[in-house]
Image 1 (cartoon, rainbow, N blue to C red):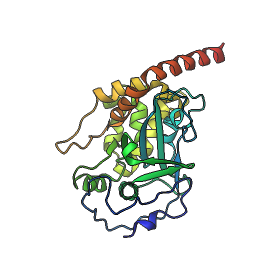
Image 2: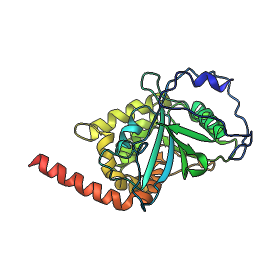
Image 3: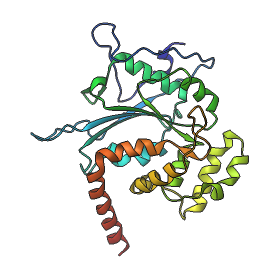
Length: 280
């Protein structure tokens, strides 16, 4: 299966092979999959793409995210991706996902996309080049949904440069933990549901638990609550695969918070004041 099959009509994204054939990162086993993935359009976002740092300022940490979802993950991280107020200058978040029209990326597509970028050795965004050696961390964020067998097959091929961040059943369990902390009571009906129905049921329950539903854009302000709740309820099997109602998003967000902690405090206080003024 040719990687070019999933790289048609790409938006805001380009890559090129560095001089020579040597990969910047260790070679990994090739994945074998029978299904042919559908063509997708890809979008690359970064709020700091054209940012020019002041003389003497510290270069931001660069985190590269490949997301299987098209909307909810991006909405949760929009303050870092858009960074309209230029508060989060200690981090550069590069976010790659498919367009909403094309649908999300399966774990296989994500893995192949990362292999293509890894072999290219760099990412070009708005005229700025990011060499992989300069990127601090790489994350592949995905739902389990009905992809459990596929994910386990990918993970069984050994370690790789890049962390898989898996939510079981999907990103909605992370959004749940940003507000609530009793999954065995609140989410019991999900256990009996077939895997392909769990994600939609999870979203329905979240909308019932919180008046007006859970807005992932607003959930970012509860990131530290989510870290504490998700970490406390996290379980995995003997292959380190997250159990139902477990999400590894707390690991990703802990890494984020470790970089933006002081800036997050400033932003969060400003949000509290903005909401207070709005309600008044």
